[in-house]
Image (cartoon, rainbow, N blue to C red):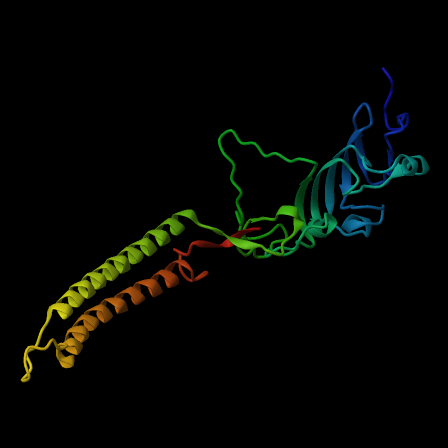
Length: 277
């Protein structure tokens, strides 16, 4: 079997060597295509990252498969040794005690914002799958303090397709949305009933109006009912409807304040923390 130890490894046209620093320990696979680097925070050249500039407490583990995968054959031939490349390497799990993970991977800021000078774990590949036989939980703020001892606020979960946060919106909370829609449909049904009642009233009123005849002093001549009588009938009906209209308006206002007011009400249909585009 060919010896692929660190000092004797050979590379094919599709492989490149790793530019290792004296403080890094590297474990290579037998074919040299995968490696685990134990060292400091490093995102490119030997003097990059917090480890490269000498920060303490910036240890890192960099697990890489397919280093320099997208580098052209000509560039590989001209550069026998390459640095970490978070965009050219095929797949990576990066763990660091102190790093700028969003900046290093050019991630959209989102509503959460970018992490800086903090511990982080990043997974990157053409496809990433997280599989849980008993389920998967994404949990934020499991501790009240971060790794540096500082207080941690509650931040949510953001799903950002295409690395574009332009149209990032709060996720909908399903149970609250169902309650909200049920209450809206009840109000609509009540209004529908009232409209039906009004139509029935108008139909009866028109029939009575057309059949109503007053005798004049001249003779039997059809005349309109007294205007004051008509006004009185409509006024009574309108008063009853106005009272119910106020109830409907109150119900609609209650729906808006309960389900659509972020974040003052627990029943709001939108999540105050979790967002997606």
